[in-house]
Length: 232
Image 1 (spheres, rainbow, N blue to C red):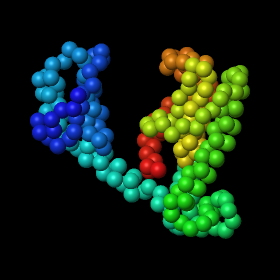
Image 2: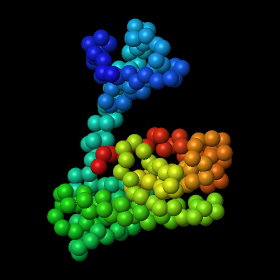
Image 3: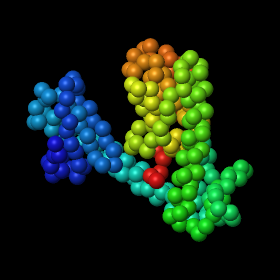
Image 4: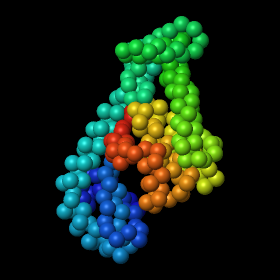
């Protein structure tokens, strides 16, 4: 239900009604999302928003600035650019041969064949996905063995706003860009999804399984919420 920007200022906003008991506000670069109980009147809702509007506008400007800064970091496929791999910057270098070649160092380098440009971004993405598949399979195998579970099917995901999911059929979907995060965050996401193979909920019992695999999961969760990768 889109609302008029003129009524409360220049921030786009939309209301989602549900059975919740309180009003919730979430601001991102696209605008304000309001979650409100069915029983709350539109007039009362707008009075609440007016009282919070200075905060909303401030958060919206911050979110737009962050989005712009991240967009400026989008990979363009030119020598000297860097991409994240396991939480560390990797320098893109023009190389010989026909396939990407990883050279560990300070900083590490990814040698990409052919002329720079869009082909480099495709090769870099494919290289990261290959590394992600191997790392995620190894991590899933380790976690499932620790819980005495059979190895599940794994699917690389490109879902927006979601690092992973587990289906009731036992399939794990894990985002390929996890390979760009620090290794303990990749392990944390895998621990969360593998624990769902024991408990398909977020009950205390589920979190006890997560703790078996990742004793510091609370710190990892908090850190993961702060992660913002440039758009691809």
